[in-house]
Length: 168
Image (cartoon, rainbow, N blue to C red):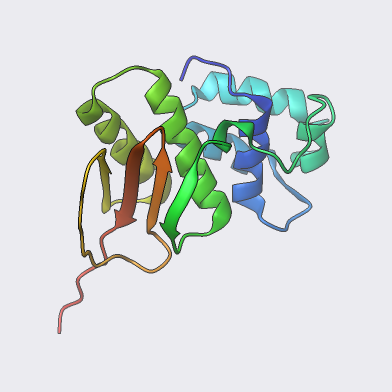
């Protein structure tokens, strides 16, 4: 990703990675940014800006210099979650990525392929993605904690991870 991530996106990725931790190793944050598609050199530059030579990044280091309220995601104000069993920060990361993909003005097929590829790079294999602007009915088996369906700009988006089939 050549585009510089917004301050809100950087804070959000930090929150997803840490949940309740006070700080995380700089290396872990850099690796997570790279998984989300940022160039390794760009991720390194960002982390070097945030790490004060301690080897860790604190949430306040992301919020204070950017003068942002750390509990807001303006990019998601038009999103309505229809159904989800996913943890909130993971769901928000996925929805932020969909907002970003939509801005690129690609075909629907390319948007879904980009989304699936990114989900599999960040969270592992087995992801399924769909979108619809009309009637759609579906019954799917999914791995617990991986289902998200949301409405954005009159389009319904859904993602879920296929459960691993166990041999009996």
